[in-house]
Length: 260
Image 1: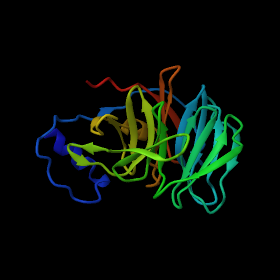
Image 2 (image 1 turned 180 degrees about the vertical axis):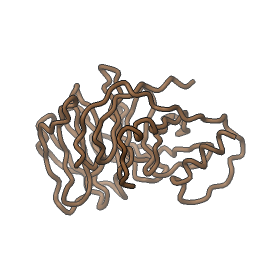
Image 3 (image 1 turned 30 degrees about the vertical axis):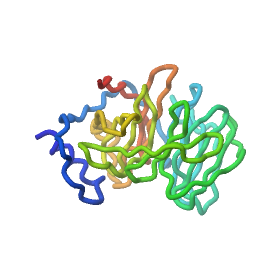
């Protein structure tokens, strides 16, 4: 049964056994990513966040003592500007909101605000728990923290205004990592897997799954930590880009087919 096979493939993201759903949902067949183009990517970048704002690519990287936020030339992979985080912090996701970039860190609930495109620090904010990744839907900032629950924040106050539990086959789906809002869906890398899930923002159920196996085959990553992570959508050009931690390439992939 395809649903059972998919759930087994994603078993790594389930840290706790969950009861079987009361009603069997329709099977989900993973959709292999279709590569349209690829570009150089800095192999020293332990990618945690990726986004495109007004045609410009921004990337955040992790690990204590190495974390930074950078403005990158997409076609060459060259770093155009960079700001380093304090060495004790592990940088995580980023999101652009108007003329600022918000960034979060893994532990300690410490967030930062930066001017765009200069990447000059303009303020900070606090949040509870861990910070993994961020995106926005035009109204709120959306934060993942490794749990099945996405938190929505008011951009002005940074206060939680909504919580959305993500489910796959009726079961809470953990390890939601890098996020991107794409054409009415939330896309999320599932940490330590090759999958991106397509989340319905209305009720949190997974509409579809993108399999990044074709990309992994090209990069030839052997380090267990060099997993897919990083999703950026150019809304003006309708182009979707993905990469991974310490990957040598950044890929443009075909947009997923619309799911009713």
